[in-house]
Image (cartoon, rainbow, N blue to C red; front, top):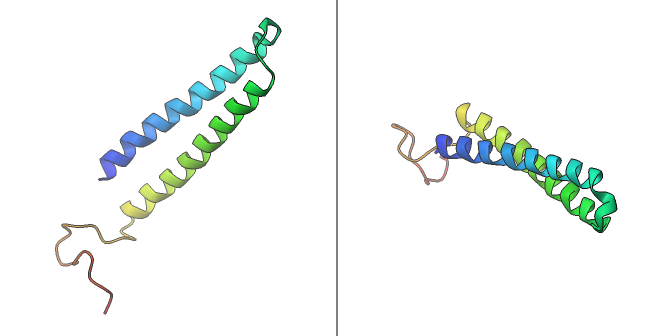
Amino acid sequence: MINLLRHRLVHLETEEQQAGLMLEELKVNMGLGTPEHVGELYRLWGGITNASLGWLKGLIARLEAGEYVMDGVAGKPFGEPPR
């Protein structure tokens, strides 16, 4: 499962870069008829992606630290209430 989360992490890092590049490109091409509010959409996209990256990195760290019981871990029943 952690490998799948790491795959998502790579995807989000790429998405964050893409949002930044598109915002920079927009700044260069502002005189070509692109509405100014489009930059806000790129900033929103970058902000949401950045927040998702922070959360996902924290989740991966917590999982690796063993803070959550994962299904299939020997001696630790998954889904049972604490005793």
